[in-house]
Image (cartoon, rainbow, N blue to C red; front, top):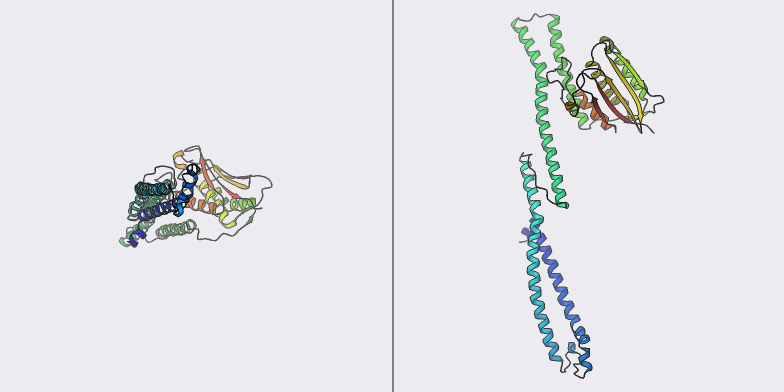
Length: 377
């Protein structure tokens, strides 16, 4: 019996309600028996003044009113007993009713949790009302939705990684089979092609390792005051040769007297290099890429604007998702990248207290990638 009450919340609620009822009725009974004699004397005082006299009925004195008092007390106790039975019966029924109202949503969430643990992430519970249980059910549904999204992303990640790894592996395998069959000549160009594919495979593995670290926040940040103007100029110099190879003009629009940012210099450089590299990759020859920086409140806002292929509106919300490409037909070799760089950039910016977003008027209208970092005090 003890184990039953220990294991069932409904039984505990019922037992607590019953204890409250019994304590209340006990207090009522004791209080009524203590107060009854003096109350009877006080209200019957007028009759005593008329000479009928009763002494103190509560203490056993004889008198004409003594029998009246005892009969009254007996009738009062009898009524009290019936009232107690009625009150306890109604209270118990209400206790069972309200206990079930409380237990029902908890039991529903317990069953839904068990089904989610079995892999059914589409389970949800009904939300009714606005009390604490309704809020718990709402948060439970939000948690289940998040788990469902994570599971979908996990399946998509496995598929995307498999696809990305298969492309260079297929090229390497094909080249090696061609060499073994004598179809491909054993020349420097053939070996260079195999080396290029192996290098692509190595870069993809490095990207995946970096993505794993930044999403798990398993990296250290050396946060300190950094001169953002000098950082932008350094990155621009590094990418100048790439821009020159495509005859793309790099413009700098840096506001005067910009304060230092509070960031990890290497990670901020990595983010800007990634954004600038994408802008150069997707810009046509003889194009123009503009890097700008200005202060916005207690943040420094850095933007990279290009006049390249642009991003359709329906893709902007997903552009920072891992392995996401606007043009699904693009491969790493044709310039599509692995779709990991922007995901890494977002994680690094957010880890340093900033945010990042993309803007574009549409296809062939260019795009602007902007991120913010806090200013140093």
